[in-house]
Length: 133
View (cartoon, rainbow, N blue to C red):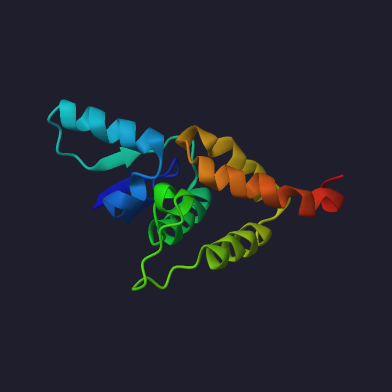
């Protein structure tokens, strides 16, 4: 398990595979391993607890699905209950729960390098066009 610490000091205990969805966190963890530092607490000084909770929720949901290669190769496992369309629908509903301010904060934390999360936001953003303008 890995502890992610928000800018306001709240800790989030997540599975390593969840944390590794972020390229930034993956790089930090690799550097910690190189330094032989066993401290699995990773500070995220630019991410508030409110936003980190949403990012963790998104990553938890997506870690349950197949890898990008499996999706691209249309590999399905008959024992898996994963449905790509269900995940896309979940993404849409998840993003639509956010107000404009929250979406903006999530875009700002793109420094975590979660491209799939940002792609979902950009796909859904046109639905907010009337409320943003």
